[in-house]
Amino acid sequence: MIKKNFLFVTIISFIFVFIIYIFYNNFILNFYSCSYFKIDFNKEWKATEKGKNYLKLKNKKNGTIEIIGKVIENDELKKNIDEIYYDYEEDFRNDNKDLKLINYGETTIGKKYLKAYEYFYENNTKNTQLILIKEKNKIIQIVYSSETQFFEIDIESFNNVLNSLEV
Image (cartoon, rainbow, N blue to C red; front, side, top):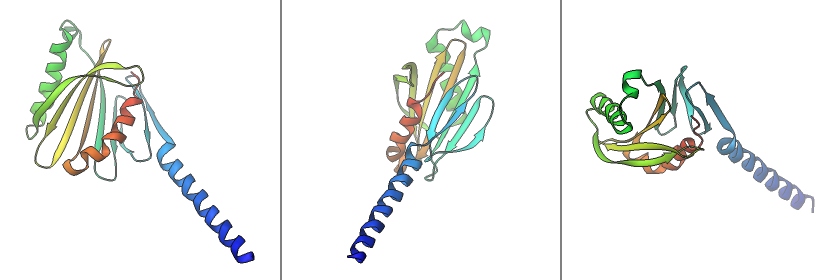
């Protein structure tokens, strides 16, 4: 009888520790806040670089998320939103000549369903998603990049990070 009780307590203890481990790794959030944006991310992502307007996250599969906040200059504010997005996307494309644009379109991002524009790129080894959000005189640039075989696996985790975004 004592052996059965001991076994039962051991199994229950193991299950309890496992549940706490899962909770800690998936539901305890890290926070980052600056004058441009606020964001939450779970333990799957680790902040590798932080700045006053910049955050870079990385996961164990070498997926990265880079978020950059920028002030739009006065002469740029005179342009319509499509021209602003085009200029930022063109700069990104020029900096990443190895990537091929495969799709783009409008979307909504974050807790307040901000209007955004997203672009999908690929090359032989990685897939990349660029998201641009304009809010007042700020633009937020989000780049999610992952090796091709992990892109779809990590996309749900990336979307969880995106859904927490506040500008």
